[in-house]
Length: 188
Image (cartoon, rainbow, N blue to C red):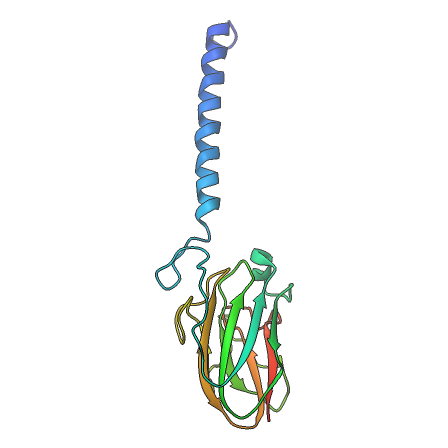
């Protein structure tokens, strides 16, 4: 007997079983937590939502957004991109189809290009920029217009009338613009 407690094979077996059960329960909880961490609803849908855009009026501009996953939330530029194809469009109705190829929720907001150039907008303490000059946005999964974001693997769209000029397309989810999620569209 050591320290008032008998160490027997039976006690070791019981302690081993208790430890094994605790490990199994803890592991199952961890797996469930990790599987659900990206499962917040986006426009009533969980996870990736597959769909295609309807026939949209005017010139169609495809916008692809990607990210580096959770590593992007460190508030420093990480593999975050927004690519516009084509990069020019004629004045008039322009329809944007935004494809989210990333692991995070994204959006696309159209703003007049500022005098300081692309990527120079001030980011607030909330990680967002001032959208006061927004001309429109695509931020709903499988639906046009404004919502709570485009889910990973999904698309969103919007149509607007644009005058000749240069426009900055941005993702204004927290810290995404600061991480490099913007591109330019020139309207002729």
